[in-house]
Length: 425
Ligand SMILES: *[C@@H]1O[C@H](CO)[C@@H](O)[C@H](O)[C@H]1NC(C)=O
Ligand SMILES: *[C@@H]1O[C@H](CO)[C@@H](O)[C@H](O)[C@H]1NC(C)=O
Ligand SMILES: [Zn+2]
Image 1 (tube, rainbow, N blue to C red):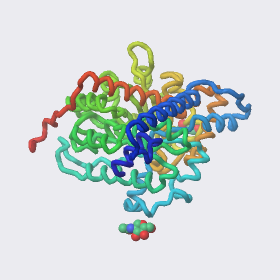
Image 2: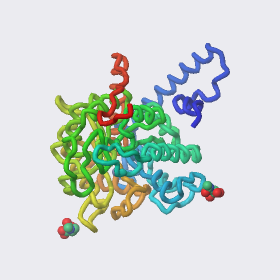
Image 3: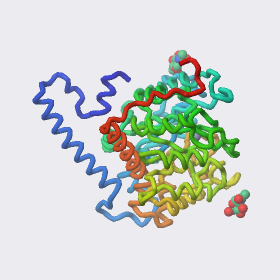
Image 4: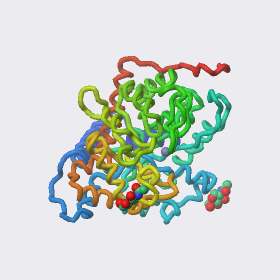
């Protein structure tokens, strides 16, 4: 996107305002602020409190009514990597207005009440050697995936809008567009460099998963179905600096895929709330990729806890035994995290378009309302469900923005630490 497009993302109501004089600009700004305040209040009412009107006794109708006010914000959708593998990143060959072979297209996301999602700008781990120093193309490939996501968002600009802060998120959702955030899925995508982190942020990336399924120079991974031998015992010294730099920038710390030690240390170190963009509960299905109860208990609003949101993953191998991954099993994960961390700390991160198989009943983005209907039957209130849909995540992101602003106000400066194994710099 061009710089002027980026500027309009931040103040969509100021489009075409460039030639006016200062007075009218000030007036416009006041009007804008007024409108944004109203949007903000409307959004809060939608997300966080009860609104007027009684809900249908029919759980499905109730779910659709709730999601119409507080749509789903999914923490992890893998459309860009699908375009890489299926279309050699040829964005113009992808038409999301028509049915796609994947899990997402525009008609189905409308049915499913999807109001926003993180487009994962994922590239896989590469063998970069014992000390992560063997050159790979991962930084280039990550840039390509950012480009693909932005290209698709722009190509379907009547539906999607690139979203890089919570104020824009609210306004995009209130205008019925699909808020499109970018998330990078692993420290291996940074080429061991904090500069890359800052440049990803500048390009619009707003969460970074500390690891994918490989260890990297910053942190240890949980692996996939079995955990590899730890390399650092959690965060490396550079990884600790990375967390501080993410807090300063306002980059969400994503703990999906990390080892338990990494997650515990990151929660303790981070000044800002944390997230799991796509992770389920280990007590419900015991794989290292899922979050154990002792870590879920670190998340909350009480003294000694950290705010956070665990966005439940639908990948069948992390949900239940072979053949048993169903919508009901996913609801069990949501329920369990709701019980242990609290219902204000759970969200959804489907992993759609990144998983080969899907749970029965949650086949694609059109099916979210069925999950909300099931949870409604299990006693989840309207407020609980609005939080699950997106309100909990928005609160976490706002917390991250607040900490970033505070750190910058206090004069925090960028970290220029260099990976100690590097010899070229
Ligand atoms: C990309 O896709 C479009 C539409 O299918 C096609 O016309 C174009 O030739 C493709 N470009 C490349 C480089 O393959
Ligand atoms: C799958 O679910 C069925 C029905 O609930 C249950 O009897 C069975 O034990 C489950 N399989 C495994 C491997 O957990
Ligand atoms: Zn993943």
